[in-house]
Every structure is written in C-alpha cells, then in structure tokens.
Length: 276
Image 1 (cartoon, one colour):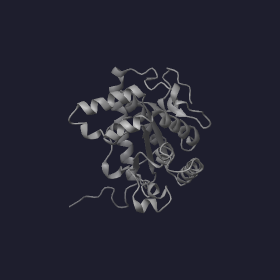
Image 2 (cartoon, rainbow, N blue to C red; image 1 turned 30 degrees about the vertical axis):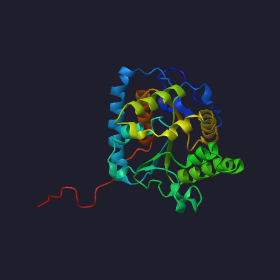
Image 3 (cartoon, rainbow, N blue to C red; image 1 turned 90 degrees about the vertical axis):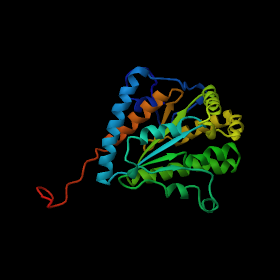
C-alpha cells in the first residue's frame, strides 16, 4: 500500500492499495487519521462537498463521463452513512444508488455480473454501489456457497470486467471501509440501545460477527487480488466517521476533477436570445 505516513500528502495517495500490494487487515490501523485533525475536518469536508456539487452538475450537463463509486465493508462499517454524506452533495437525478441484496431467482439464472452490469451508471451519471459484485468473493466464500476453485476464478472475471468498463470510459472509485472488531461491537450496541436505530439490527448480525476472522481474510484477499492500476481500491480507516467522510469526499472530488468536466456549448441561436 501507499506510504501511510502522517504528512499532508493527499488522502487519495495515502489510502490507495497499489497493484501487487499484499493486504493484511489484521495489522491495519482502522483508527488512523494520517495527521488530520477532527476540528479541521468539518471545514475541509464542507469544501469537498461544495466541490462535488459543482463537479456533479458539470458531469451531468456534459453527459460524457460515467463514474462508479463502489462501497464495501463489514456490517456497520458505515456504508450507508458515507452515502448520506457524499450523495447529499449531488442532484439525485444524476446519482443512482444501487444496494445489492440476496439475488433473485431471475438473477441467479444468469452469471453473477449480469445484475451488476445493468446497474452501471451511464454517461453523465455518478452511480453508487452499496455492496457490489464483490459479494461473490466475500459472502459466497465465507458461507461456502461455491467451491473455492469457482470463487477464486471470480477475481480474474472481476478484473477483466472492470477493465472493460474503464476502457469504455467509466471511472471506477472503490472504497473499503475498515473498522475493527471493538468498533463494530460498539456500533451494534448503539443500534440495540437506540429505539430509532434498532430496526437496523438483526440477530443474524451476531451470527455473522462470529465469522469475523473469515471475513477479514476474504476482505484482505479481495483487496490484494483486485486492486489494479485502472480500478484501484482505497482502504479507508473508518473507526472515525469524520476521517472516513473527509477521505472519501476528497478522493471522489479529486478523481472527478481530473476528468475536467465542462458545461456544454449552448445551442446555436441562444446567445442574446430574448424570451417574450
């Protein structure tokens, strides 16, 4: 992974999983701040969100660039919270959000990428995936839903599919939100204790929590096997919501800014037109 020093290097650089990096989440600091301070983060986040509002309007008006944001993380890692913050800067008309649940019978009748490809954003859209095609090498692996030879093959299939998308012009931004086991326990407890959040908790969460080590290994292999030059993962320390939001907003804004979206030229005849 990129050097995780505490300098003011861009969070895009500091969190990037470089191709060939071996990711070991057992040693990863999920509470890292990269030298950022919470009291400064609010103003920095506001600036990032203002940038995103302007960038998304230009992306939508230009209708040239598709952008796909992929969010993965263990239960309670903060995927929904991240979407609320980032998507809050956007006009919903140009930002479809797709949450991938258990496949339907129709979806199971096709290859695993069939339903995912149908949700890929079009030109001018910024699509957000809450969970994604990566469940095929996560929950499928942990629960032994496919033989190992099959789910391991999916790494190559995913890399090839993402390469095809980027070759066709899609910018793919992938974020893994990393929390530690104690933080997950506290977040689950907060849900149980708060009547307004209790609906988000299920007893199945306890059963899944017992598989922590298996999921951690699966996540590490996912990051190692599928972070590429054209679609790299960003490993976000997510114990602190303020750092998570700051990092994701900065990385998304910087990546879209690189596309240099512009408002299209006005239709011929509109300059100086007086409406009566």
